[in-house]
Length: 397
Ligand SMILES: *Cc1c(COP(=O)(O)O)cnc(C)c1O
Image (cartoon, rainbow, N blue to C red):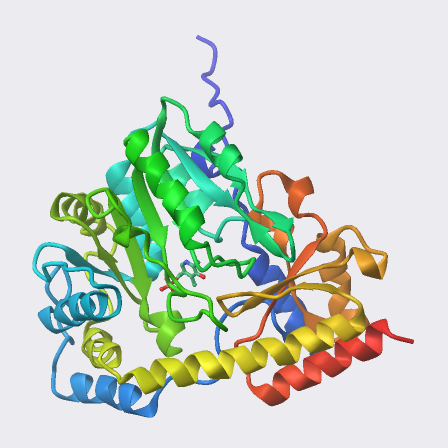
């Protein structure tokens, strides 16, 4: 009998075959090897409020959260999340059945998609996407359908006709992100109303990633999708402490939604991490109750940083899309005589001593994202001033 041969088969499964290591690993390694200022990955270089850090220490010392916390999250945090949604947006959620604490927004996104999608379901998502969306849709067996945000009058905007055209009979869910990473776009009430009307008309679920809800600048308003007519019962809203309180390592996020939706998300979540971040949950409960002055000062600080870095980029010759929210600024490199953002970002550390991220990695339609490059401005003022100066020196003669 002929010897059986084993068909060679790739180890990484087909669902994930298109996903390599993230761009952040490559760019952070470049930052290290060249001694560059890393404006690639979006994490602050200073910790959040001292009293919140102390609250975590206290929880740890008092033995609160050192053992498995309750599956849906500690009651103190669920109550604080519900109170926050009520106070800021007038949204009422039952802390026991309509709030779920997750291991950061990342787990909330994964659990929502794993819990709500059938294999083959289409997910319409705004492109450029946040890092984990495409992979999570793939892990859930869904099919992603991009709707590309395109530059219009100085900002990346949603084309509502393109959005409507992207919805088919197979569409189950819209995946929205506002304020939007990486473009800094904050969807307007008018755009969100159109999204809501479409969701109601086509009977779609909506997952909305609002982790930058507190980072909107100038007179821009963050409108939670769940506040719009017909949306409360079909919307899963995702929040996180990481960005708002500058503790990205704590990985405390949450979902607020109607009971049956939370129940579906929780079913998936309980088999991912089960629970996480015990003592930090107590600290974040206190953080959410900080006075308005904290949130205002945080926003004002980031607005000044946005303006500082944007001025340096403009002087260096980039076209700057002034972000209305988030802590990222997207630029167009074509005025510098460049067209390929990936090549540009690979060369930038040698050329200027600064690391940035090519937006193309966040697109399916790579050509639509090719000339855009993202810089993070959640760094100390002196670091941003140094980066701005390096960019000016490298690109002006
Ligand atoms: C940072 C980020 C997340 C992940 O948040 P964690 O709470 O750190 O998991 C999710 N969505 C967007 C848009 C982000 O920028």
